[in-house]
Length: 231
Image 1 (cartoon, rainbow, N blue to C red):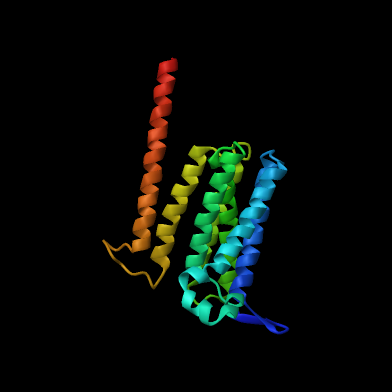
Image 2: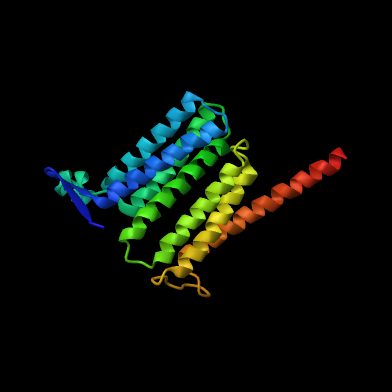
């Protein structure tokens, strides 16, 4: 895959096009998720559209935060560069806070938007790694595993089409995604072991999966206590 494409006087990095295309697919999946769940609310659709615009702007302009010197010395660099992977993570955090804000304003559970965000993120991930599969120098099973994990979790989400925004289901998706990432990192030949054969990333994902498991067990215990009280 070419690193850049020239369109007239402009040079576009291929990675940008891949990310934008993947994000558009993620946006379409979120809209479809709303439709299948029976929530054709225009305000919710606008929230999704705004979140996509915000994510792209934060990712692109995050270069100002991460490398201000290069922006000051060469302002036109903003046209050709972005915040890279750190910019993507920053955009994700900003979008999460935006969804939280909208959930309070629209009087909707934050888990509702969390469900949409999870579906959009998984679809984006699947498309990104599918395209990356044809131009990547890393082993094919790394991207292939990411695609498989994303598609299986999307299937889990859409199997509960009427249960959108259920905390228990959302917790399950996050737990299995974290465990999947631990597995994928074992396939990465560049993985650096820090503790008992696990990398820092794997330790973080394992911690997140353990937290999700604890939350799930606690919620199940509370549910059983309520049932016993009723009976």
